[in-house]
Length: 284
Image (spheres, rainbow, N blue to C red):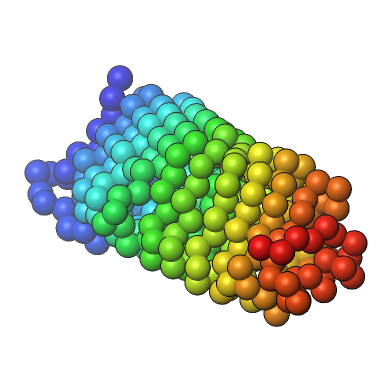
């Protein structure tokens, strides 16, 4: 059965309204179609609602505040209108049955924990027209079924644990304008084979690719100036880590000593780093 929140008294309702939790307390249907023209869904409005499986949000909706749908463990499908500009922190965290999300183009930032622990989320559709510029920390943390997501080229920062334990994510195209990759950003992700990071990247924070067990070769561009500790530690299949330039700082134990050969320019700081830490080194 489908529930509908209609216009009031046949009047056109303006886009200044806020949908609050007390307005939806009586809804028990499994499919909800909100037809009234709300501009904002208030923080925590649907939090921990466990009975509905599908929700259609109205065109004109602009803001989904923090925790709005957090813990909706039966929710399988959410239809986001093209007008949404902001999804608050942990907006859909713990919605463990959602399989696919189409992100509206006006969204500029994915806030912290937006889709954290959406355990069945397999695909995130982000169009080429997207305004997305930043991924805050833990956006897709423990989305263990995630297989497909395209991050737009204008994104410059991917923050801490953004793709933590995304074990089914075998391929990922890094944005060409990416500058910073946060701590544990791809910790224990499924990225496999060759990983070539984009020229222009400046910093790779500690343990960014820790325990990415399917990596075989990584190319670090000459633009990278800082590489934190343990970045590729635990990557047991990683054969070669190639440096195209000379970072100003490299942390300790960036690789497993017995598994990986570091390659770089002769007489470079990379060679010195390897000699000091007992890592194998070859010239490119």
